[in-house]
Amino acid sequence: MGAESVPVAEAAGRVLAREIRADCDWPPFETSAMDGYAVRLEDVSSPGASLAERALPVAAGDPPPPPIAPGEAVRVMTGAAIPENTEAVIPVEQSRREQGRVRFETVPAPGAHLRRRGESIAAGMSLVLPGRRLTATDVALAAMAGADPVTVFRMPRIAIAATGNELVAAGRRPGPGQLRDSNGPMLASLCRERGWNARLESRVADDEAGVDRLFARAGSAEDLLLTTGGVSAGDFDLLPAAAARAGFEILFHGVSLRPGKPVALGRRGAALWLGLPGNPVSTAVCFHLFGREAAGRLEGDSRPAAPRVTALLSRALPAAGPRETYRDARWEIAEGVSRVEPLRSAGSHDIGAHAGANAFIRIPAGSPPLEAGARVECLLLGEVGSR
Ligand code: AMP
Ligand code: MG
Image (cartoon, rainbow, N blue to C red; front, side, top):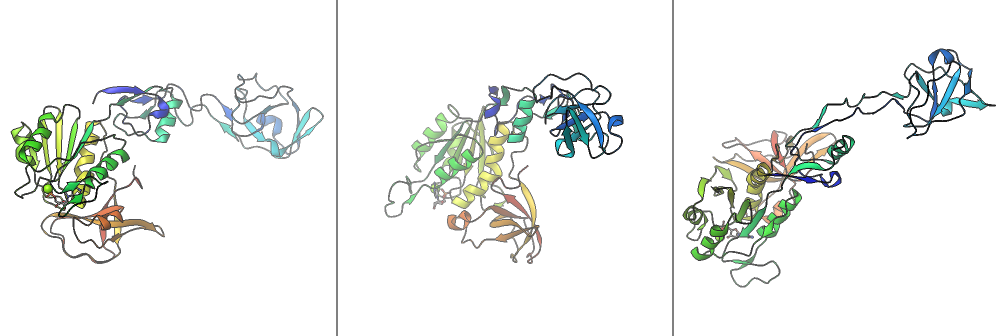
């Protein structure tokens, strides 16, 4: 994607295109961490020292004040620039004012309550690297470094088309043999969760004319076409052949994966087509494994994948088959331990079970039965624990 500029306050969630470097130290000057008195150590070397209070206190935003004279204490507020020869700040709570003078009960440690210039960030330091999806704290760094506007990558344009003769719109009552399109709205929402504004196309019937029309215009208004259905081995699974007819190079069709085996990826020029299987859990698994990667990489995101954690299984699982398997699961940290409970699912159509999941357990191909307490790898579906 090309780059574009956005106001720093709107940059969270976007992928950074140009490195952000500190153009100044942070803090930018020596400052007080407390409301109190700036002092020289030799003037307060024993408890009960009494010093002359400078008439003019220093507030945040005032220019740096003149140095402390011998025997003088300078009243400073939190965040104020302090005299350059300040050796400690004594909090106001540990002082007592008496007729133009101020008495300190305690002896401060050298450097007490001082914030040193550059102690957090030195000018010239690299703050955020290109390829990172910006968080709120990245935005704080960018603003601190004067990066406004911020240069981010253009977002990928995504179109979603659900295919299948059986589908009716969610707002309609299905007739005999029909069912509502839930994949289209789910994919649009999964995209939106990543910040991508996907366009939902009208549903496509399982006939060559409709499918050919879809691939003829693919790529004209989008960078990535996501379809659901029509990629498995049935008589009406027309998409891979239609994509190939329309000049798409099929990069893969079929992955050793369960659910989601028929997933397909094609490319024509700059346009990508990701064909997701129609069963809703397969659609979701393939979106998290392939859709996020495809659209995220297009956008320049260096870490587009779902976050992975290890967790202890809360109940046993049978042996996996010959394909890498993803199981709906509930992951949590309970009493400091990462645990995951496999959900009971009737299969790749069981959107009810999937709706209770916040993670997939990844079971390697050919895995033996796993006992409760075994360590497994999980993909987190929400933002919990990411980055
Ligand atoms: P397919 O991959 O086209 O063979 O679809 C497999 C099954 O997934 C279909 O029989 C439907 O039950 C279901 N399905 C397909 N598309 C959708 C959709 N858009 N929304 C919900 N379920 C779907
Ligand atoms: Mg179908």
